[in-house]
Image 1 (cartoon, rainbow, N blue to C red):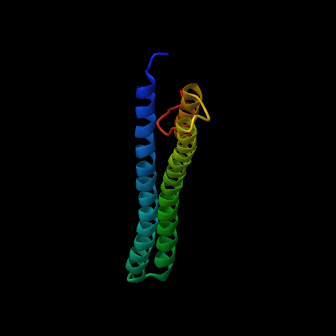
Image 2 (image 1 turned 60 degrees about the vertical axis):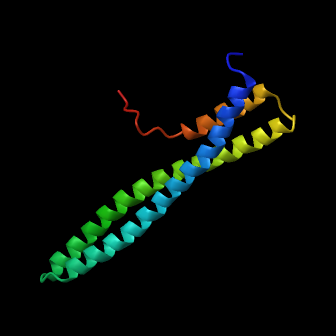
Image 3 (image 1 turned 135 degrees about the vertical axis):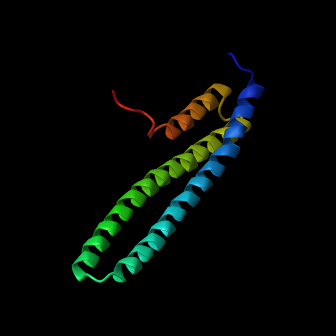
Length: 131
């Protein structure tokens, strides 16, 4: 084994501290995007209703609503999924760590659970560009 048991325990404890914080931040961003969408939709609607042409008002209102809804809902969907992945990875790792501390599982199994938790976080990689 390359690393000592102490190093592995420290890595797991670090992850147990980090995962819920990241999940919380992502969920705050998720809610903020929802609030932003509502405020933006109200602002655009008010601006559009102040214009003179009725046809122009309806077209612009529909297009602006559709664009705002599409962009913000897509971003919120991705951020919500990523936040849930962090929460689920934390729960899995926390249970495994408690089992390890109670001598139910060995360090090798804890490492397996840690790698499973990390895989949960890598399920959705938006940086990969297909060739």
